[in-house]
Image 1 (tube, helix red, strand yellow):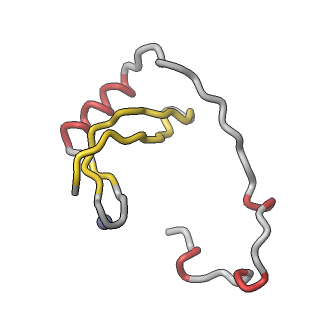
Image 2 (cartoon, rainbow, N blue to C red):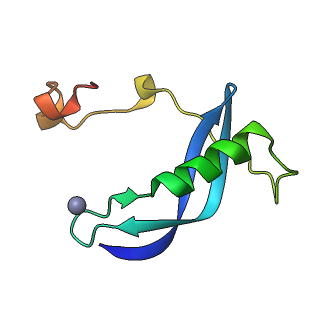
Length: 83
Ligand SMILES: [Zn+2]
């Protein structure tokens, strides 16, 4: 694990929000980011009383229906299942 500032995406009251520069520990092998309980609490308080956003993004939205599988990937696999 190594310290890094990461970007997180969250749904808050039905709205997608992005938080940048979250202090986290990132796994050197798989890249997974882990935040401490203290940082978690800070994010909860940020979302409970959000300040004015630094900037606003507009994001493209896709439907998986528009994705075309390769011929040899057409069958669903165990990894493709959403848990
Ligand atoms: Zn890992």
